[in-house]
Length: 282
Image 1 (tube, one colour):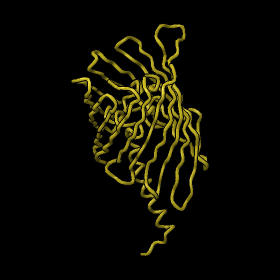
Image 2 (tube, helix red, strand yellow; image 1 turned 135 degrees about the horizontal axis):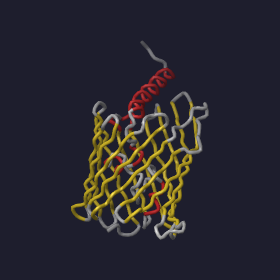
Image 3 (cartoon, one colour; image 1 turned 180 degrees about the vertical axis):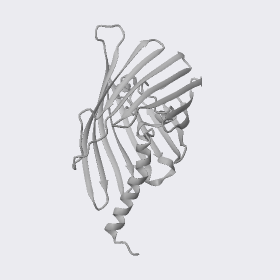
Image 4 (tube, one colour; image 1 turned 120 degrees about the horizontal axis):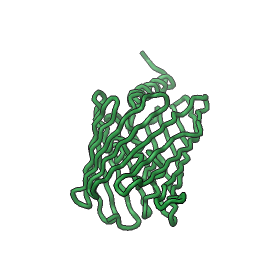
């Protein structure tokens, strides 16, 4: 049967959407949050110094030097679920400003986003600062031969060290209730997390996350640094349960990460990231 070009493009768009739905509906950790987030099972709302700032924009407040990062992932090994992103963050005194862009999908169905944000520690009458962060993002969806839609989402979060070994963090995404042109709302996401670091070499992360009307999901991650320049990571996410693992290598100026997540039915999601620091990271 011959399929006309518009119909063929529509079919590719539908296929891409069908491929995307299992990942979204299952609550899979989105690759857009970076390689470390995948490796740690998405348990990163309390993780400080995360350049991507998607799980929690307050994490930018812990960045101490100008940093640029590049990220790539392929959801479940499918070309239709490829993602690329770039980010830069620059400290200006105690304030850190960040900007970046990301692209997901292929020519038939593509999601693009451009964002800017700011974070800084605040001292609300206590000796322990509360890191606050906000992020604004322009989202755009394009379906070949069908057109596109845009929406602007506002997100915010905080992190605080309760004691030297315990940090709490929380974030809310799309708090302004953005909608696409057709009126369909963007999903609102909420996350609450904790990072427990009993030793400088070991960190345990836990988080509860909820997206829209979906049930709350549990996330857990573990990071161990046998030496200062090397980090080994593992994570678990549910439900349904997925397992993940990753490694990060740091040098004076370069920081590289490789990770993969295993979904019990859909397979592997590999991801890599590389960062360049304005000052030595070690």
